[in-house]
Length: 283
Image 1 (tube, rainbow, N blue to C red):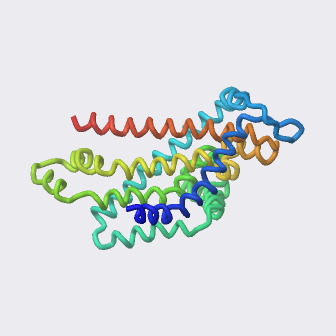
Image 2 (image 1 turned 180 degrees about the horizontal axis):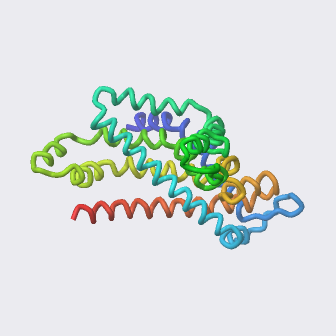
Image 3 (image 1 turned 90 degrees about the horizontal axis):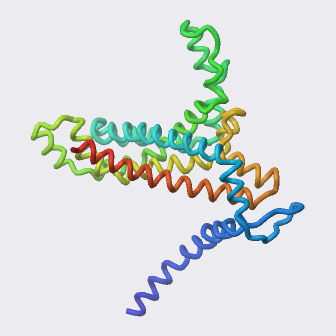
C-alpha cells in the first residue's frame, strides 16, 4: 500500500512543482506586494490597505465599466457559441465535425492580426462603412464603429468565440438523446425540450464558456488600447500603466486582485441566476 502511495506521489510531484513555481508562487508574491508601497521607485515593505482603498476609490468606475463590458462580451459570446454548438450537434449531421473544424481554425490566426482586421473593417474607410454608403443607407461614415466600446465587444467576441465553443460543444455531445425523443413523443415543443432537457445538462459547459470569455475580457488591455479609443479604458489598461509606466507594482497588484475578486463574484452571481432562471422557466 505504501509503495502505491509513493508511486502516486512521485507521479503527481512534477506537475505540483510546476504549478507551484509558475502559478501559485507568483500570485502569492503579487498578493504580498499589493500591501506594500513605492518610494522613489523602490519597494517599501510597509503593510497597509492604502492600495486597495485607492482601487475602491479612484479606480472604482474603471472596475465597474470593465465588469459590465466583460459581462456583455461573455453573454454575447456564450449565446453565439451555444447556437453554433447546437446546430453542429442536432442539425448539421455528418457535416458537424467539418463545421467545428472550420470554426476552430480561427484559433490559428494571431490575435493582433484579428484586431487590425477589425480596425480595417470598422474604420471610416473600412468595408462596412463603404458598403453602407454604396447602398445608400447612410450619408456619411459611422464614426462610432471604431474606437468605441462597440468595437471592443465585436473584437473580443470574435476572438473568444472558438474558445467558448469547445466546452459547450463537449457538453452538448454528452446530452442523452433518449430524454429528447421521449419529450418529443409526449408532444413537447422544441422550446420546452431546450429549457427542460438540454439546458440543464449543459450547465457546466455554458457556465465554463461564459467564465472563460468573461475572465479574458476583464483582464484584457490590448483590445481597448487599439480599438477602444480614449473613452474605453478598461482596468487592464490602468494595471498595465501602473506596472510599466509608473513603476508602481503595489498599486498595480492591488488593482489586479480587486478586479479578480469582483470577477469571481460576478461569475458566482451568473451561475446562481442561470439556475434560478432555468428553475423559473421549468415551472
